[in-house]
Each structure stands twice: as structure tokens, then as C-alpha cells.
Length: 264
Image 1 (cartoon, one colour):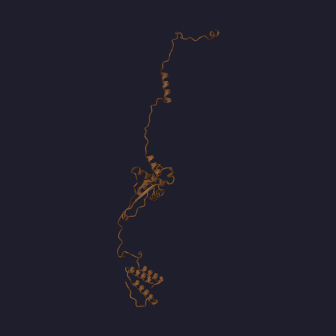
Image 2 (cartoon, rainbow, N blue to C red):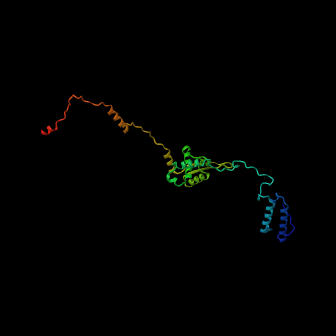
Image 3 (cartoon, rainbow, N blue to C red):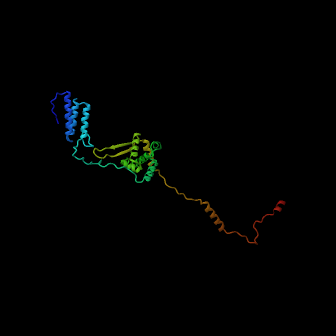
């Protein structure tokens, strides 16, 4: 859209004519032509034919003509509806909430107290963070690395996604773990791969997973309990027949007479 001017360029009359013509064009223009008028006002202002205040007034007039909720510039015509979102990001992520809060708290405490980390390292993390790192240690013992999504790790540990992300971020900053990110342009990213980087932690895991040999010993109990011993001895005494000497039989070893022995 171009306008032909017959007034001398650079004069005040020229600037006033331009301002009045642009104002009339903005008032009578359609909504689709407002973008072109916006660009034309900018070009005239760049050539110093309009002052800053005059350009601001014209911009405000254009903005008043626009439909509500529409800014400048618009790449989609107002008559064309916005297309519905398509792809993996079409639906927003739902807020993660535990169906059983008491079970989640119990699971978090059990994971945090499982001893998956050395005490010197575990003292630097909170209970929620230790629970998540314990789940990662379980996955590393099974598969050599952890490739579960962050939501699954948080659910197994009984914590929220925010706490799980914070635990991974702190452990990575302390150089205890190594996180390999797998982005995919235009698609959902693949789950990150987490491996343990700390030698102290690796030795702790190897020592904890190694089982020692041995078996339960059950030696023969050769000494009966005291109560059984008493009952058995009582039974033995009762079962032994008493030795009774006949009344007319003299004693084999008569008792010596102590008075005679003293006289001798």
C-alpha cells in the first residue's frame, strides 16, 4: 500500500499530511490490512517524518482496531482457525499424586534406610533423595545401568517428580553419578541413562551385593537339659530295688567296739 504526496518533503505540512492520511487509512482499513499499515507507519517513522509521540498514537489506533487477544504481527489470518495440537506434546502432563500416601511414605523410608550408599555420602542427602538413589542402585545391580523414566523412579521411591529431579541434579553436581541424555528432535526424549561414577560408591555396591559362603550348623546336643536330668535320675533311683538283709543273718563287717579300741 503506497500513498502519493504532492507537498514538499521535509516540511511540517508534509508531516502533518502524512499523519492525517495514515490516521484516515487506519480508521477505514480492514482488520487484515492493519499489519501492512503497522509496517508503513514504522517505515515513515524511520524516515523522521513522524515524531515518537505521533508514531505511538498511530500504533495505539492500530492496536484498538485489532480483535482482542491478538497481537502484532500475526502470521495466521484471523479467519483461519488455529490447528489442534498434534504430537507427543498435545496433552499436558498430569499432576503425579500417590493413591496411597501412607504406603508411599513407608516405601520411601524403607528405600532410604536400605543402606544403598556409604554413610559418608548418604549424610549429604535427604530421605527422599536417598530413596531415589536406592532405586537407582537396585536398577544398576540388575542391568548395570538405570534407564527408567523419571516418573517411574519417583513412583518406586514414593516421592514426587520434583524431588527425584533434585536428587539427580545434586548427585550429578557432586560427580557421584553420570547422566547420559538422549534427546530426539520433534519427539519425546528417551529416558536418561544413569551410571555411578564414584569409586567409593561402586566398591560399596560390590561389597554389599557379594554374598559370603556358609551354612547353618546343628550340632548334636549331648547334654540333656537340667530338668530332664533330674527326672531321669529320679526315675533311676526309683527303679533300683532296695537291698534288704535278712534279720537272722549277721553283718559281714561288724562295727568295732570303740571302748575296747581305746583301751588298747
